[in-house]
Amino acid sequence: MIIILKKQVKNFLKKIKMNFRLFDIIETEKFQFVRIHKNGNISIEKCIKNNFKKEDIYYTNHLSKKVRFCIIRDPYERFLSGLKWDLWLNKVNIKDVDIKTLLTANEHHLRNSWIGHIKHSTSQIPYLFNIQCSHYIDISDLNLFLKMHFGKSEHENKSPLNGPKDIEKYINKNEVMKYLHLDYYVYDRIKKSPFLWEWQHGKIF
Image (cartoon, rainbow, N blue to C red; front, side, top):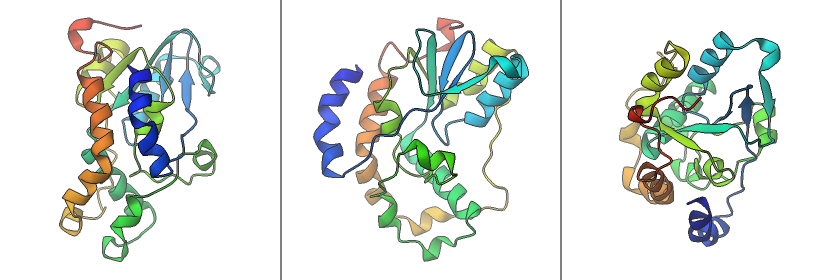
């Protein structure tokens, strides 16, 4: 599936000059978890830390033959969540932001993650494009996934309580959807693929 998607998006990614992000992985003896910002990372990491010893948890960018999974999210919901977070984090008013610059963001380097420079509203394609997971979990199923695999859900809504309100009235959704159309193509293909985890499939590790 990923090979087919690569061929279909290659020319588009070149056109918009989007850099491919190096993958960021948390590994245990049982699995590899691929982190995608604004897709429930904190919830997964809490469960991992509560179920594995510190010395048995590794942060790496090397692939192994273990079960590998990541969380996927509706692209527009993720865009809004990432934008709200960045506005709150940097104490910026949505009225002062040129939304068009967010739709051409050229930032997907692991180096930026190390120094804390992450644009959380940017496309999730480079995260998915670089790596083949054995399982993809939609964020809507995250609570159930965590309860089945870790015995408890640590899923929390980390959106700032005092963050910007009603930002959608300052956003042209149609323009954003044009930017996200490829994200939706990849997202929808994964949702229809046999790699999408559903509770009926049982535990994967």
